Image: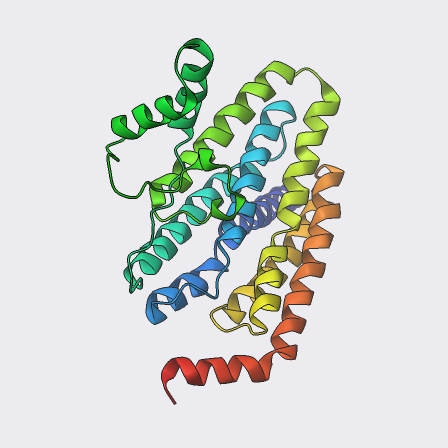
Length: 290
């Protein structure tokens, strides 16, 4: 009887530990962005945070969701990806709103119009009598941009405007196009094992490179002003926990290998905090008007 009670108690404790670890995986990925979100909202300054961090995580987690359909991994990791995508859109919305509010001179609009771009190509191909310029003018009229300065659009093919749009809807549209195309390709090749494994690798490798945009931003500014150090510290502890979780739970190899790379990049950012500490302090004094 004692053996049965002990066994049942051990099973219960094991379940609690498992549920706790799963909850930590879901919530822990989002937690580092709370101090960054609060800092941006408090200072009304989003220049120190790289939106390419959001792009990296959106692409990584979208690929991870697609990977789940080809190779079923643990459900908490799938839920984490969905929650993370929602969090990244919240970060983007805040940054875009604040940057637009801080504009002293109204700049030329930059928008992503994937649907209009596809319609543009279709009309150029189907209607052989229509010239591209005429078709573009027609699309501009349909979009409500008649006369005046045209906004920068995706089909301008100027890479410097990619992921630097001036409205939140453009970011949603871009990820929608990426998700639909990715889902269509995955549906066609779902039975091809190497392709499924490639998606898994790309998902975790992209996430592993999460710190790279912020490292580049810090190098460009020669400062970490505007970046939440608390966020990076939470990144580091979260990535250490996540990598250990992958190893213990025997997740696919791609997960723990790229988790280790992510920890390495976190350490690089912390080194930048120390290297640029004087520049950061000076930039902070200038911003406060000291």
